[in-house]
Length: 281
Length: 331
Image 1: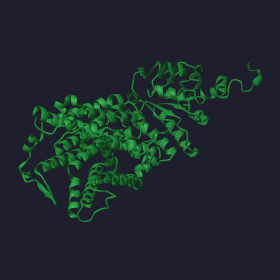
Image 2: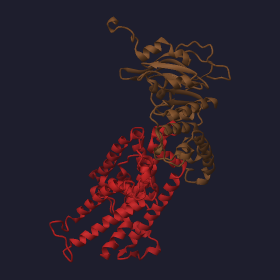
Image 3: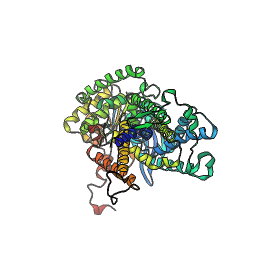
Image 4: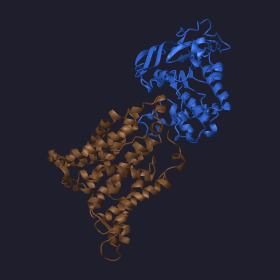
């Protein structure tokens, strides 16, 4: 929750698809079908700029699929969505990243046989040395590389990975890989960071520092959308929670509202958890 | 014995070693740095070889004029292979490239275009012009210990090693750059590269073209050195031996293909020469129930196969590889 400024969510009705004062991402009637199964069927969602929004839901709710659609790693059957007002449904994944929407993955994708610092340098965009014609001539990209390296080192220090700088990423622990992936995503300097289960497999000691990092992203003016099962994290850091079940958004609202919402409880525990089975027709 | 070692040393730096070395430099770009499973390096080499032999023999072009033909035709071949397959998983590229290489080989073998491709006999009459390009300092050829090298072969060797040096420097300078870093990130996980804003398809295509063109020069050197462009030089085993060389030298190392090719052809030439000596009926001879002069050449492949098996068990990173690096699972 933002403490110093006005809460932009003040006065919003907690209903699915509610309009936000300053949306960075707006999606309309997004559908993804796998054969007869409708994995994602989202009518309308808006993500508030410079906020931390959690996307939760039981397993198989379509959270990650929705994530993949928004970042164009998967193709939607229908629907439109816009990032900063720009339609995104025809964009390719790497272009989405360049436009400022960077994601991480549920199963971390640290590049094992690259060193930690190389992982970080890779994240920088607009590198002159990444062009085939300029690449062989070091003097053309040496200065930019030095600038990228110092930016990477600053981030590594912030994420407490600086002592691993020259190790292969494959030798990092699971939690360190999560940190590396987040730090690497920041090298792109994205406006919006999309984290797919940042807490999965992270030990409790690292958890707190990860939470602080996510809060730090907001403090820097970035927008965070994350998928998570860890309810402590959801309650602690999110400004707004969106709940998905069976592909649809069934509820959204501030974190304290979600816990008491009957639809959410039904989605997680089943609608008839207190009813006698014989009474269900 | 000194003749045998002399032959083996010549084999280590001879035409075949150079040709396979160039093919391996290209394959290293594909497989070692980008993770592209190209099983059709023989196809690229074939394109390069015929791109030299056909214009010279059919249309009287000069050797130098065929260089752009080698580059353009192998680049087009790479584009044709890459456009449909590089968006798919890497296994599909393997299937398509091995099929495409075989299709090319069968196309040049078919009697239908015998006037242009020479069919199964290949093209054998294109070396007169190349003979005229031999510079004066090679008029006598040279001798390597007990092996006398003819001026023609000496000239092809000079050209070949120049190409090896040129392409090795190019690959080295590219792979230390941010461009090479993107290739290696694609090898590790292309979705990660994509999520960081890299146009993975374009990089994979560039890599396929670059490695293909280098491999085509390998085919060109082989054809010029053998004085013959024949489909039998470009069977699938060309690709597999090239893979063996890349693995032997060290995957993803600039020196790997050079040292790998030299060692590989040293072993081949050494065992060939030694076994020929041991089955020729004079001096020491192996008992004929083990092998005789008609079948010893098969035996060397058994040696090579066994040696490679030992290599991947005891030194999976190859000669120059970094064992620590290789010990990480790619995915």
